[in-house]
Image 1 (cartoon, rainbow, N blue to C red):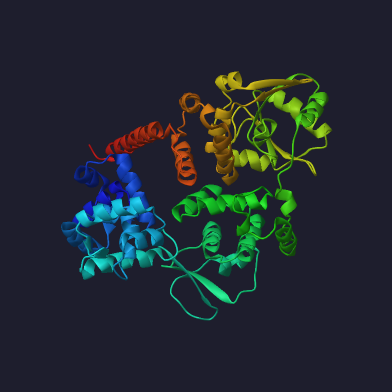
Image 2 (cartoon, rainbow, N blue to C red):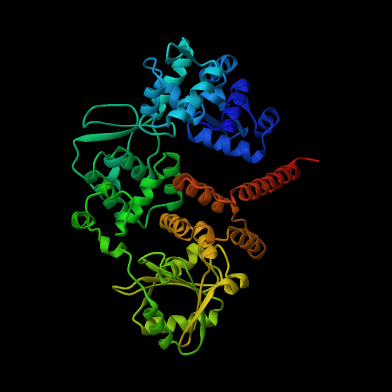
Length: 519
């Protein structure tokens, strides 16, 4: 349930009741980055809270006293570890054999035996006559019951439940009960609640509904709701929530499903065509979101319309399609090095029947001084076109252009981004489907991917943009490792870079605060 570092921070805070980050660093000997991650995790779980005025963290007195008492009797890092907690809670009802515990938890028999061994040494579990049982300590059982009740059907310190309409329960309405707020009213016989009470936004409604859905038809409604609000969703927030609640895989498959892509578990949803018909009742056009095939022919036509030679950097899904890594794409991501090339390319796109939309809004949102444009044509993939800086994040570096595969179509000189640059660009975006695309690339390219190239370009981008992108890249790597159960070789280096950056930020903040103090 908790890593060793998180348990260490929780226990240290329990001893102090109230503590600053500096005190926790001194007490645990962990780094600032490790403390920061642990506090963020515990705060999200609702186990601690931050006092904004003093910038200190506090723990509930009852919980703190209970943890201190239990910490003196048992090895709590073992009991609260993912495997330890899973096994210990199966023993709350009655003593069980190792085989029974293995079957109930889904852990292998050998792994179960190993965990039980450490739990007996932690003094929390006893073994006698072939069965394992929790020690007779009401406070330990109370603590484990409390943690399990908080988890309910999910993690994150929230309990989700459904009750017949009209029945009053504590908590906030969520999931299907609040779909009407965002344009999808549905007939229900149940109300859906989250406890303790919280502010339920669009992203919470999606995640909670996915967890509460009990059949393909209900997940089909979630798909319609998500598609209806696809342009409103904060994808970064949705991804973070999905990881927090343990449903990242479900959310990624939801995103793939509405686009008509093949998914690992098709039985989760009704047939796509059936959901498409149902979606029309809510004025949702799933065809608009469906990925479309693309080929060399599109670029030949574009090259023929260009008045003079233009260098165009192709990255994203379209690049993957041309390399046979995926079947289709919703949009084509392009970048050009100069404003002059941008203007020539826009003229050619308009000759092909494309129309621009939202240019002023796009520039405002991306805070771009360089030309930026989005273009659409009925029945064709949309086009996102950038000049030098891509989506207000990475810039089109010379190294990217050198690594690219070059093809020529008339006046169009097309630079196909390297696989490593595609991964980097997708890692710093906030789009869920980009995470899915990176997963596809890892599965198909396997050991041929040069992860060191990604790190080198990351360092180059830091110099070119004077911005740090190590944190979103680390988040992407962590999400991929969690979902795919793989080890990505640059993770430790990224953790070091993030920790180094956080330390720099902390020093800057400290120096600014010192400057404000009277001399």
